[in-house]
Length: 349
Image 1 (cartoon, rainbow, N blue to C red):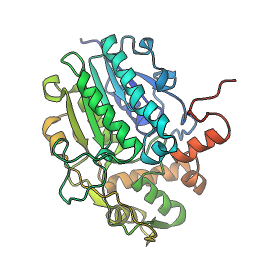
Image 2: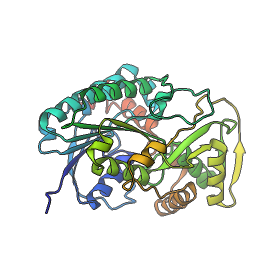
Image 3: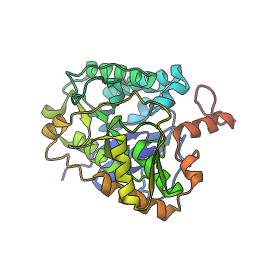
Image 4: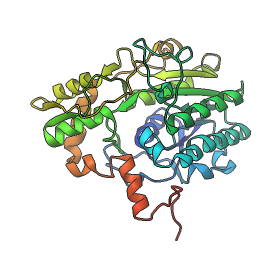
């Protein structure tokens, strides 16, 4: 019987990490989490909390000891979208790039066999072409500090990749679905929340921009596939993470939410333009990660799950607009209440 492998998940107390921890435990991995704790208290307890070894620590302070006996690192931690990245641009570079470099070097030195990095499709920038973007041939034009930090991290990680230190990079689509640390600041979740709380699904743009989307459990499935797939197939590879048919206009996403919410109204405000519009190809992930990557969730199925989640936790407007489900609101609250400083570090008493 093979010994169980130990996985370190950074950012395990975030939206994806809260689901991934339990997912990997059920796959018989030993799971260790490392998280700064910004969203530790933003917990709905929708899923059973699986016991893991938890380290509360800023990713910038990761040490060699944190990686002791770790076989695999899944690196989720970071300031995780464009608005957060613009909150403190120099700190975004510290957390998303410099801390990634430090973590990867320590992981390689400590004997970690596989390093899985979650990058972002934001590195493609604003696409002016209608065809689907692929991992290698499509132009990369990162606009925001967040996207630039992810692009730099990708390049560095691929430089230190080796047969004994496998680097696999995923660029996820916009994620949706229920989580113990649910997010209202991402497109389908936001539209569902608006419908549930206001009985009106509101689109602030004209609804025409394209967005690729994927369910959080399918993200977990892909990360698991990255862990177990043969080295010769995935070592040093980059994958757009999504599903076939997973490119939708914002209006199409809203219409899917409307179907789940039944009598909900759809309102297109169109008070500003959103330049971010892109379609992404997922041919490579399906080709390379078969039979391990088997996504299951459509917007309809994910919407039903979210609706059940809302009913169970008695989701309200306070949740919808408040710090518990909105990352930027949460960080601003922590700064305003002096729990963290301008460098986004927790103040010590």
